[in-house]
Image 1 (cartoon, rainbow, N blue to C red):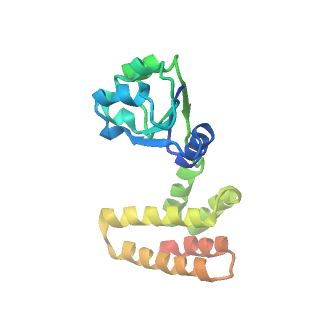
Image 2: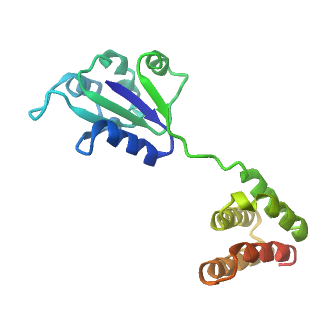
Length: 201
């Protein structure tokens, strides 16, 4: 059995791998493999068991070895390949997709991500409007995650211009960070207060 898992949600992928292979499976780094190692890995037996349970990580990054994978689909062992990314245009992928199970484990995307950035940009000119925009999405957002996105935008602005205003905004965000961690005030109220003041900082 060969299965191929890919994606950035390694927690879910590893949970599924443990279900399939158990806790005591072999782990092999695909980048370290030579194509000549593959017959022993896929077809050889171990001293302890005829049927091996093997996790191979990031084999697709090792193109010469990955291209040989279709030669070993009849392996007697239980093997899971774990990839961060997968080139679906490659000839190897096209060969494998109809012959083995391939599953994606992707972290959920934040549908409000663009809106969060728009809120920050709006607040630089109109804090009241930014707060109104925030009201529409805050029930589906985590305030600490939202704050982190505000910081990322402020850092981007600072990297672009490194002006006095950008420095002041970063100081204000630093103070807001302390308040979010130590204050008993509703975090959204603290964030809204920052958005309302942003234009005048």
